[in-house]
Image (tube, rainbow, N blue to C red; front, side):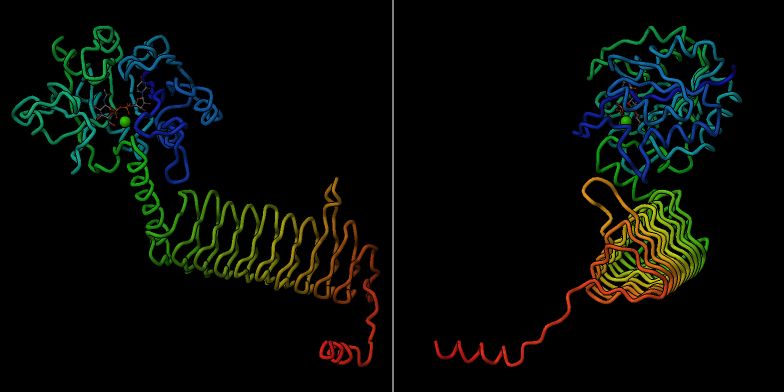
Length: 463
Ligand code: UD1
Ligand code: CA
């Protein structure tokens, strides 16, 4: 039982002015708490990770409980020091405790490991991860002992800063290593005599120093990594940094991204080399795009799997769907969940699909709705075709064989089957199965009334 990781996530996040608890706000497509838990899981097994929950505890638990972590409930949020006091029962058996903040999401496992190693090497009672960012606002300052020492004198919270201490340019990241014994033998000595009337974990530095224990500081190489997310502005700055990290990773793997600062790409997204991503594209969730594709502007792909040589024209939405090699999509195609678009197929302007399999080389070029349908290979779906899949009670299926021609503006009333090679006349309403190679006409015959229009015009003039 060497190391426990405690993650403080009980606070409300008053500065956000949001109903949602702070740690459930998302950056880079993931809640803050999830970023921190994911990093912690690289260091210790989930049974040694303790998440302190309080404000909206149920929601926070639900967001990470599938990962097998432990929870400690801090019913009243009386400060970061109080949070660790609350965790005492759960973690006092561990030799060392690493404390992470649920609102410092960019922390990398490598850095947590560095804190652990430095803490052990220096045989410290407390190790503070620090940084020297340009903007120090909102952070506690770490005051070191003089003469370039790695030992800390105290941590001073912003509201308690005096002009001389304001000169200290090193901030407290809110990430610490503690030796269990000194931590828990002194933690009850924390007081609330400060601007917020809270128990500050930061006061442990001075308390431990006064008790003759060693408190040391380790500076993070990259100050961005310890950015705190207290306001929406800060969160969006972090989100931008995360997206840019992902865009840079993809570019290093051979993907061209024009104006990467305009794209919104989640960190789990994969894209093959020689694919081009135009400005203002969103690639979200578990989206995978193959190589030599082009994703044109304003397209949004969410949990989409796209093959190679695919052209996604402007303004397409692809969600939870698969698109095979050589497909041509859009502009403005809407692939709703469970659409599978076969090799070389074409789904064009204002075509909506849902739970559909469109076979190899089939085409639906314009203005169609294809839902709950299985469509074979080499099918031509004319402009304005609609699968009437809903009868007011249940969803029903349309099955279209290979090489079928569905004339424009036809309605296919499901359940219905169109046999291989059949031909549907334009404007038909098809309510019965069509045999292979047959022609189906489901419309009234055209009538011609000779001279009718001219007569009407003459009538109007005489009035
Ligand atoms: C804290 C530090 C500050 C540091 C900064 C780094 C203190 C007193 N100050 O300030 O020195 O520079 O982090 O980001 O610790 N929390 C609880 N229970 C509580 C209160 C807070 O679990 O009772 C959790 C919050 O949900 C949050 C974390 O602790 O995830 C930090 O709390 P926050 O109020 O954001 O502290 P800061 O003011 O940012
Ligand atoms: Ca904070």
